Image 1 (cartoon, rainbow, N blue to C red):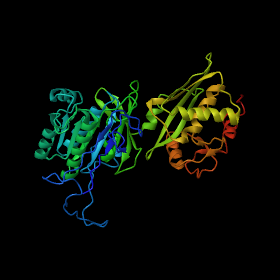
Image 2: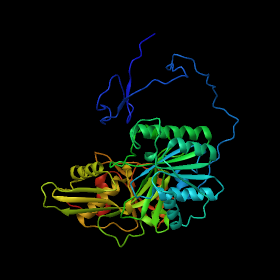
Image 3: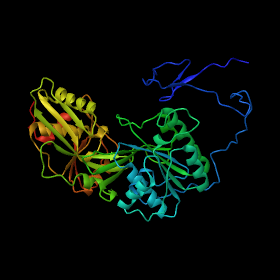
Image 4: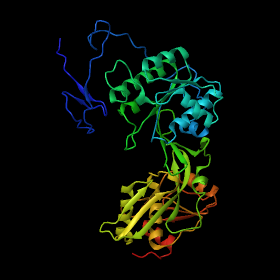
Length: 458
């Protein structure tokens, strides 16, 4: 019989090693490498491969089974993010900053779900049941038939779920759950991985939908091993700025629907309210036209979304001028400034540059490049764009404008909100049937000339 060799793996990224080391070379985490214990095949403790297991039944792609029916929460924004509702036996992971509203929206979702005739259980490891009832009273949800439990022992939770057989269970949060067969503290990598595995397995075997709440690190990532995000079917992030009332629920992984789909909510005294027309809400606080303010027609998932990009370029007395970004990518801003200086002769040396996405939104798609460049030049030259103008397009390092996707959808959304002029790359397929005037530009220099009427100076 061949000698069994030891194997070690990283609890964070899953990298495999032949010996223990203090630091994972793949992800850089310290003390995350543990020994992999061979699986037991039966009561005799035979290792995997030393005994025979049961034969696994195989199927094919064609089936006579009825398709799974999604269950609607009754919150249109949440159902949109999930791809059209909750899929039975699915596992969902929800992350977000402390105090952003994760527990609030999930309690509202559980109440709507229970009122539709489905059995819903809310398990909290952070609050007592009396505290949950107090929050439910504030949200006017006291009459919802939601079952509550305050427990952290995973074995007791699974026993309760086995007896109750709910349609939906919410675990708030996965970091507070602990399994008594794992020798580590609650919230540790081993505990989070073990408890998440048990809950996901229970969901698949018993047909129960499970929503797990996850804490996030200071970098904004869900705390614990990344393998948990691979276990679940859907990963949602709850985003938003403390100073803004808007909250964005974003799907970063979804096996049953489009990724990067978003739902928009507004934080009020009565909880989170849905925003059915986020474009109008994000643009509602725009005053008269001002230099540095440009409207960008973007796409979030399948939804067109108009947001205001604000820039401020001010003289600086510092040897190294400031570059501050809120809601966008700082590296992308540096690239756009470099292209403006190199290809168009618009100098930002000796100037502080501030960039902000209004309303607490975060924009990451390259289609916002042209709107960012327009905002920078507008603030630099003190020239305001017309209030009925939207801008979109990707900028290459040569200064050329590259076409983007779903241009027709962006134009239709802008037309619906009263915009009549758009600046877009020339090689895009736009019919103009919406009645909007489309100004097609070849490169960044041509855009500056057409948009600012040759008033830009280096």
